[in-house]
Structure formats: structure tokens, C-alpha cells
Image (cartoon, rainbow, N blue to C red; front, side, top):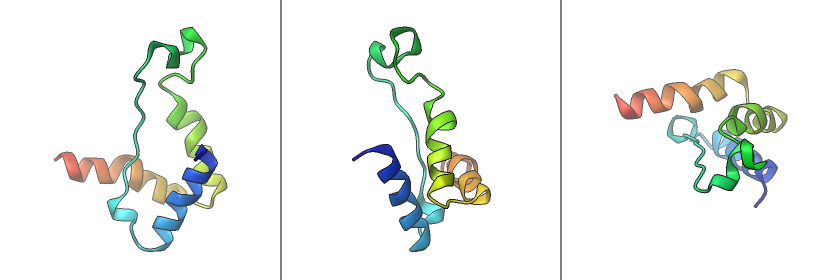
Length: 76
């Protein structure tokens, strides 16, 4: 599955009422994923995936919930 498909899947989950249960993260398990090795780097989620979410119709408030509010609630 490609990332634009994942973004549409997140939107579908939101539409089904699962917004409060969604968190997303990024993991770089290999050095090749670092920018110095021409990989995506640590900023991929914010610079590339968030715009895909927006293109899929996810609102700014929903993105804030996924990236900030849900993790804050889970880890507090």
C-alpha cells in the first residue's frame, strides 16, 4: 500500500467515527532512510504525509487530534 492510499484509509476511519482512536508515527529502522543517505528523513511525516492527509480531505483540526491530542491523552 502506498502512502496516498494510507491517507485515504485514515480519512475513511475518521468518517466511520474513529478519530479519537487514531495516532500515526514514523520509524526509521535503517540508516538508508536518513536524508544523508538520500532517504525520506525524520521530517517525512510532517512535510509529506500530512499534505497527503489534507489532499484526502482530513481537516486541520482532525490532523491536530491525530498528531497532538490523541498522543497526549494516551501518554498522560
